[in-house]
Length: 222
Image 1 (cartoon, helix red, strand yellow):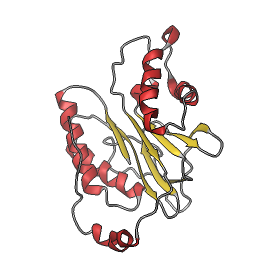
Image 2: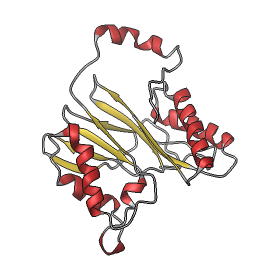
Image 3: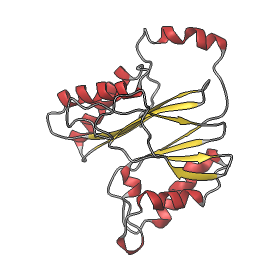
Image 4: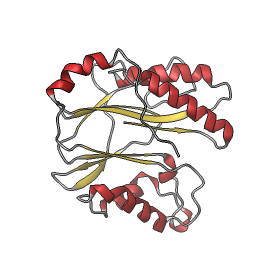
């Protein structure tokens, strides 16, 4: 799972976003999320002569241990849904004790010597992780106020999380109802759900060899 947001607008920023996407593809096979983000950051600093920056949240789900390894770079904290209690919460990053502490939550493209922390989140079957860009939390609502993370949490708590297949559509509709001004920033949502499945024995055997070949990109851009 990877969600990034490049600062600014226009063709120049679009070009930087494509470069960042290429860096993500190059580094995505790193098992350590912290090293993955560090590698992207170093190269992004070298490519980025215009002084822009990007925020990002990256994570890998290990179905056998039911854990997600997460790192953030200046990005809003995700929301977590617990099926057992039927409730949402803001995920508070607690660094993995085995990782070396660095500049916590530092955006990409500013300093080339930044290190990043890594956090471990357990997801039981049916639990969900909702990541989003700051275009969501900086929406203008009643009285010109910002929605902020607490407002997003309140909105998503009012939705039927058991209908996970339409949850994002329902959330977008709720956001549109709340907005009192046009959204002037990119707005992206990413929902991941643990379904309790496990990799097959054949996939487990082949897994180490996948790191020896280039990443296959099945993204369809419109």
